Image (cartoon, rainbow, N blue to C red; front, top):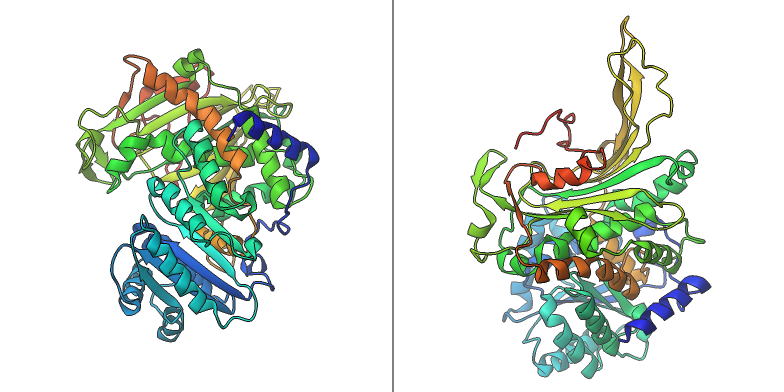
Length: 546
């Protein structure tokens, strides 16, 4: 794809605000009505490529079973798993039952429901590199859909390694599977990572469009299916007290943290090629930044919302060499203790190069150069083997302009902080100053908070449940658009290029079980700020032990 042409078409779309195809209205609340398939979706076939893989067994099949159990799937649906293994339908059903029992959120399976669900499961073994496998799939799908009175939704889910995307897409096109008579009812879901830099993302978009039109493509980021992520817009726009404050006049800075206590687990070979910048920052974290920073869309439709997200990415201040030196830190975990057990250094993990310079931690300072956010720093950090598992967005407001309580107080009021907790417990809290009971006029921070687990009468749906229903409905609001992916890579790629071409570019070590390398703290300290190092459920620590 010619990149200049892509940018021009993007700008035209943003100016016009009139998409070639508009999905239905967005309901970010995750209500039962919003999670149900639309009335015209009465028949659906879901084809999962890579059905024997970890993603299908841990996420997709448990999500599909839960949707069926709660009545959210179409009246008539079929699921076809495709993988290299040679299995019968019954063997596939048995494997999927074990997966749902182990990873599903409903607990013990209801035998009657499982029997009805299992009857919809079918399997086709074959090599995805062989065109004959797609001919066999075409035959099987025609047989399964033969009795349906009207065209059904056909959803292809590529739960396969990114390296297999191009060939699979080519075969889907060559076999006619992507170009049915009713193309508007054929969709493809593509998992991240979508490319490994700007150039490869542009090429992959070309390959996707050789088989599917953009309106058929759903680039999935499961973070966008989480209730708190969707609630960012509701929280901003449905509460009149916050949107007027959501700008450079009142916000001092924004922190976005994605911290994990786990290492690379069984993904050492993949992670050592990707690093955390590609694995987390380019997709998850920039999506969160977009939702925090975007302008109010003219309408709550997929294209209007995505237009505003793209504008944020277009406004990110490009990283020059000096910016990378002073505003970006990469690190790699050393041996340490996490959750009470000793864990090895990254270079001693299975399938990792013992001389690897791959980053397991990154922290950076970014700026959104537009009228709303000019001069407000956005601090992003992501890492593995850190002190706690937490994903959160912190909006730090400016201090009151006058120190009215300066005399006679033990301490000064802290700035107000709004914390959006995405995991492990989804919820939102607002930290405000309050007088401590007693004769002294002392001010202490207190939290006004709610958690999804306790504030509503039901458990929030899994992210994949919401996203699968949206894909079946053709609602692309929570999926990345072509230009969205490319603008994200425009911001990230120069950082990778600097790391690749600069001799002796430091990779700062940090102890497993800490909050990351000290160099990441200095990014904040130079600005007179500090990271919010807080373990969910505990008060912020006054000092950090490394």
